[in-house]
Structures are given as C-alpha cells and as structure tokens.
Image: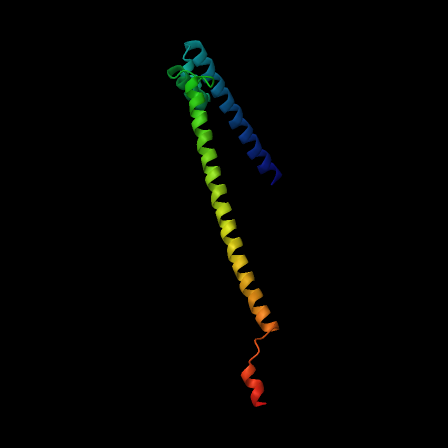
Length: 127
C-alpha cells in the first residue's frame, strides 16, 4: 500500500510540475509576442474587464454637483421613510393607549358598581 501511495503521489507531483512548466512556457510566449490582453484574460478576467470598463467610462467624481444632488435625494427619501414610520408607530401607540384607558375605565366602573350596589327601597318594605 505504501508503494502504491508513493507512486500516486509521485504521479501527481509530476503532473503539477508539467502543468507549471506548460503555463510558464505559455506566459513566456505571450510576453515574447507582446499579446498582453490574452495574458490578462487568461490570468484574471475580472481585472481585465474592470480595466476595459475604466477605459470606456471615466471614473465617477464623487465631488460633482450631480453626485451631491443624488446623495441629497437619497437622504431625503430615507428621512421621509423614517418620519413616516415614526408617525405610524406614534399613532399606533396613541390608539393602543386610548383603548387601554377605555378598558380600564370600564373595569373601574364595574368594580365600583360591585362594591357599592344600588339600594332598592322597594324590597325592604316586604321584609
């Protein structure tokens, strides 16, 4: 078993070494032919695409008046949403408080009427 494991490890090392040599030869060939775009695509497609985008579209200036207006609109929108939410929560709290007050007043009335029942003068005459 140890011999077969060593054989497999040796084969994998040889395959990795051959792959590195093949890639090194390919990079050397691209450098010699000055085809850097192909090398960039082969090595890092994301960086290549970002560089192409930057060439086509100038970088965004965050100090421009347009950008400031956009930020102001976004902030105003967020503030309006926050104010609306605060008003909604406040109205819900006031409504719940009024319902609780009405329920407590009704309960207090029931307790008071239970503690002090109304006297019926007509019943005392018959006793």
